[in-house]
Image 1 (tube, rainbow, N blue to C red):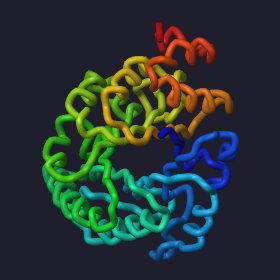
Image 2 (image 1 turned 60 degrees about the horizontal axis):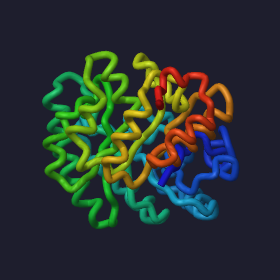
Image 3 (image 1 turned 135 degrees about the vertical axis):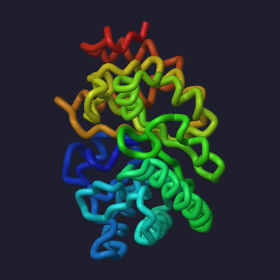
Image 4 (image 1 turned 180 degrees about the vertical axis):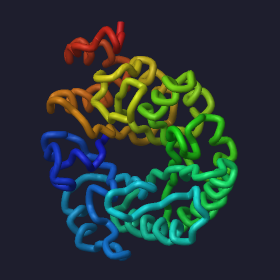
Length: 279
């Protein structure tokens, strides 16, 4: 199922597009886009409002740099992390959310300590998630965070969780360190259940529409077809015109299916077709 992040949904963040314009039936909620936790309590009014929008949701748990002030950093061994995450699971239950995206911890000082702190807390959280009938999906990140490289996930995969493949983050690591994006799929394919799609040029985490950076989307969509992906989320935050966002949704929806690939890209007529190389 293809959806978008709540940042570009006008009914939720006051930015971007209406749900009718987007024509999607799944939205990934971010804590900085709507106050799901307010004054350390679950915001029941926000939950009630979201339940009126007639769409399905996934949930992106708080990160270490949320503008809303509700932050989680598994790089530090902190009981507050688990307290906030249990509130997230309760919110997920109230919204009938089955998939919750999580980040590995920030690396502040010792990498090993941050890795072990992340590992231990995720072990607790996967057990707690089962009580709420929630599937945790751990996202690949980039510099100074646990989970930037595909081999780092090996220990986490012993727990009952899935993987979120973030293609934009993989491209940053590919450009900076020469890691092949295909390695993320090669190592993690059996565990990839969730995907974040957005583009960049390998220098900054721009969150551009598909085709406005240098990611090879033909390759990515081919690889995604080999995975058991349940949700594909367009994590677009910066765009030059509305059509580029709507076209990205079409690419993700139809380009993911082999029989539509040539037809959809010819129809869209990207100016960056030489980059996309869908021949």
